[in-house]
Image (cartoon, rainbow, N blue to C red; front, top):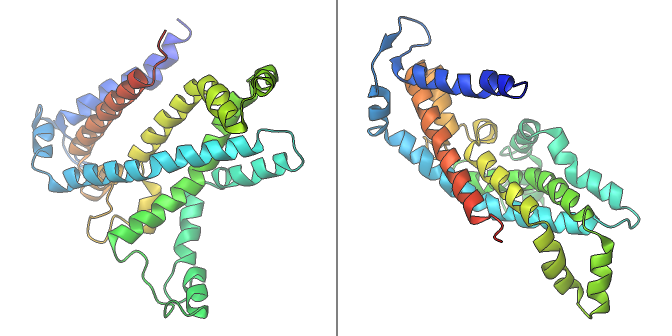
Length: 275
């Protein structure tokens, strides 16, 4: 019962209330009226929403594997007690401490045409004229944001995997080494199987975080050019606070919530440990 009360108040009730809002015409200011599933039916004729879904899936597919691979590589690099390991852990985790919004603003400043450090350096070495608009095309904007997120999330994944790796008894590595296993074999036959649950959790968290991408695109591309880099959460934000329609925005949010729940369930099913 003590655990059930906060779950009801923080999770269950807000979900039910959100579903209720989505069944109404609920302007940010004005009268509220019940319209049933009309908000959900309108989603079928909203091309921007479907474009946002497609772009979010593309972005998720691009960043998920690099985040996991780089996070694992960093964790393997700093898990020992060699000199400097703590310093490297701190440096690799520093982007997470700084925060994604702050890093996005830093990227925005450093990539400014004419004055940004990137353009100044490229002009100095003679590669460009120093006025490259990096966010003029959605492809370059997507790649830049993806690089930022991989740098940001790699440290978080490193810390998650590092906790699992440090729980592995050293005797297992010693036994494998005595049996003639190479370092790569010890990694694949000892480490990976024993941190499988942590890898699965990191993968699930990474995909959920990618599907809920918002501030990095809002700051760096503002969904543009046009709506080509608009994510699902940005579309919900625009509907709620630009168009001032909380009912239809909440309907989008409910669809996203159930989509993430279904995607997470599939991942947990695929990544489950078999007897």
